[in-house]
Image (cartoon, rainbow, N blue to C red):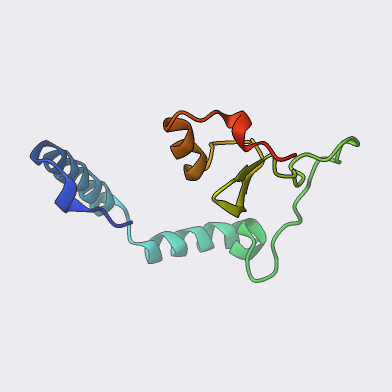
Length: 119
């Protein structure tokens, strides 16, 4: 995760520093990962299991269960375009979601969405 600190104000930087300090303290209190793995392995072994059996991994993952699919129309299918950019015929829009930049710019100039309808 990269944070662009150049664009932050002094107050935002101070908040970021405080949060980072809190996170650093929280991480410092944790046991080392190797120690935790060793403890978990010992508990699993005592119960007669391996970590792979419990958590999956190494191809021993438990099968995933899924609810059966309901019959009916499929969602998320391809939708034909409804609008076309007159300046560039390759740019189209289905009418779903946020309008593309070219259409938003034209609407800002005073045009109406109906002006871009296909057919």
